[in-house]
Length: 461
Image (cartoon, rainbow, N blue to C red; front, side, top):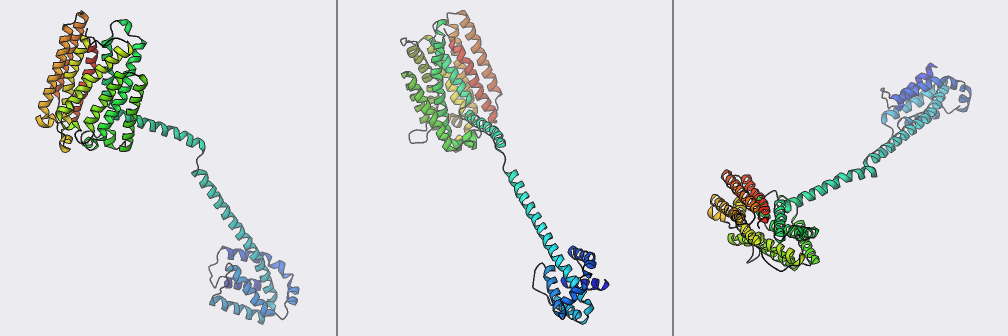
């Protein structure tokens, strides 16, 4: 038994290439050899008879069998392992008593090799199994279910809609849209002769004017922004085109779409006064904005002011009155006293608004060659000129109230216009011309006061 262990340890040194630092597999092999050595001793006599005269060959066979099994099947032997092979062969031939020990070792090593192969296959199968699990796990995480994608898509769609509405809100100047609607309502009330005229038909007529004019106003604002992108980057960087929220191509599509909608809707309605009013208004504001020879009227301060006055004080009130008077109520054309006072009031007020509009844009207009009264005369002087026109407009309203035949009209018109005149005078004294925010706040205030004045003007009788 001791001799068998000595031979086994010598064989293990051959398999490890002379390295005394055995790994786990070498220790396991010795354990198997010690357990099975007694079982193979019984085969001693048979083994000696079977291998008689072939000791040297058998020793070589053992070494050649051991080395590949420990080297993982590699037949490339080192010089040191070849020397150990020769020693094992010679030593086995000189000592016949070791023949049976050698065969025991051979049988043990055969059993080892089969065990190692099975273990290697088991380990290899485990690795493959883990790899398959890993791939399956990655796929399970990286591919979300349809339900999760469906749930996530709703917030994204809502955010997209909100962003589009926010861009359109900035694109159309909401304060201008409110003023437009109130101007139309006020001008429509000039056609009311008694309370029976305020009926569902009246409101339908108002909507027939409001909706096409809102569409055309979006087109007008869009054209102005499309040709003023560089100016707006300095003066009004919050606008969609100047800030990059809306591309130039999409801006063109939006403007052209609303222009088309406006004309198509007015054509469907069939009111010629409405159609011609939209054509004239859109033509004036297109000439005001586009950069082509003989146009771009905003470069000339007097022409720019005339565009504002013509649109707000003449075209819109007269077109609305004619549509309601002739197309809706089927009456003859008669311009009442209230309409004349309204046109005078709006003309003076529109001049003041045209002057105030350019006060905050001096820097950008000067850089890009846009001539305005604010550049020519100075911001402070233009501010007080505009305030003078506002006060004259409120004076006209006060005069219209005092000449009315109705007491309630005199009181409301007199007190209302006096209050509005006082407010705008006080705010003008508090304005800071060095602050764009302060100037813009005053400009928005002029729109708000005009919205109140629309209701007062409608009460002229």
